[in-house]
Length: 476
Image (cartoon, rainbow, N blue to C red; front, side, top):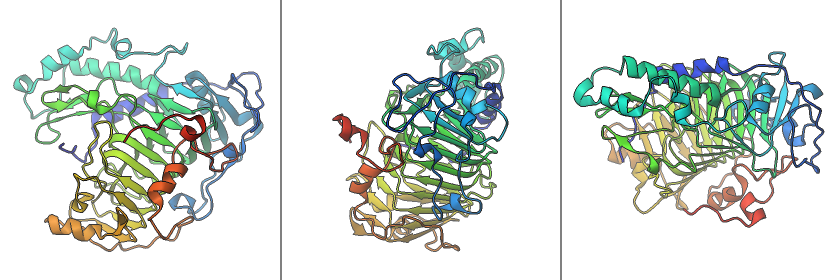
């Protein structure tokens, strides 16, 4: 399948993020709730609570770029009034906005929270957001059919304005602004997560996001851009977790997935997929000092963008002990910065209609260092398909295995492509806590150790949720 261009949607991203200001920031006034690690109540209420040890955890010293400088402690120092257990969107929004600004807070998510809901918690549909705006997909398609509109200009006029109005309504519900000094963590054993929401860490410092399933962040109103690539593209607006100008962020033991709405269900208009999903975890706009560890990235196309343009800055990011399955591209796409990959497992086997295009893209002078990463190669893919680039970046690999065999990814890529990738970076990582000097066991061990649902209340790794409950794993 053709891969999407490497640029960001233009007006869509600005419109959606501007709507975060609409999300409420009221103080939390609710009855106290005491939560012990061994006695989580059956029906939670929003309010002050005892933080589980998992909620007080901090990033270990030396654990990737986010441990640099002052380190990443999130809401570790929160007082009792700023520890919350939440189970609904309304409770989550109140906890995120509880004053004073910048106060350390621990927000413990119990169960699944549906983000695209009204004030009473009722699910909203795309039709609900469009009501009264004048937008309809049929009218939009008629107005901007390339045979009528052409391919040289972005849509403008009545239907594009109506689409923006409808999109702003959805953004008010699904964008969730995470402030500085926050730990947002799923309560173990509750299948904690956020469905249809976009966690936004914008110009914030010292944030921890752990033990959450972030599922199906879906845009009701993708924008048609006839100038995006040779054939045009439908661009959506929301990432499951987006960092924009953020610093000291630790994303750990989360699961990112499009499920249950996989891209195979998307229709095609103007000959292009009507793409309703954007990124899973995007790190852009001079974000810096980020560690992404023990996460599972499942069934997604444009998975992780590091750098929103070739003129972006900073972007020092560590990815370690993560699993990528059913990923089409951007695992990650790296621009400009210094990116460290170690002990990750990349499985290129198709899943749920998602066929692998490439894993790591290095461009705009990005300097990627890879240590002891493992690729599982599906029969339809070649080693030369695993990397991508524009001829300006570096990928410095040590201990790389493909199906258990030592492999030079750069050499394989350069033999097949005119614009080569440099095999040596001009920096070497020092923040390597937990680095394992063999990748041989990673496919098996990370199946047990990565993703949401394997941490206990005390932050240790237990049996995966599927093993504890007897539930079947998703088929490959």
